[in-house]
Image 1: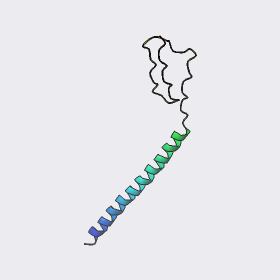
Image 2: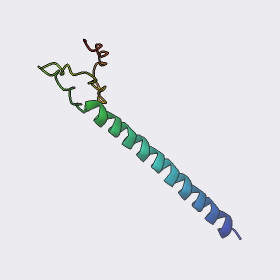
Image 3: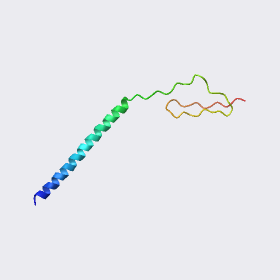
Length: 79
């Protein structure tokens, strides 16, 4: 009769130990990942082109999808 309650206590203690160990592992892993991301050097945005875009009627330069400064609005075509 006394073995069954002790078995439940052992099982509960084991589950609690696994939960605590998992929490500690995940917190340390998250901290290591955050540190690695902070030390990562991201590439610089590409340099501006040396030549201006062509002045062709109906031609518009699309906005870039990468990081960097915002594109300037296109000038209206000259007639």
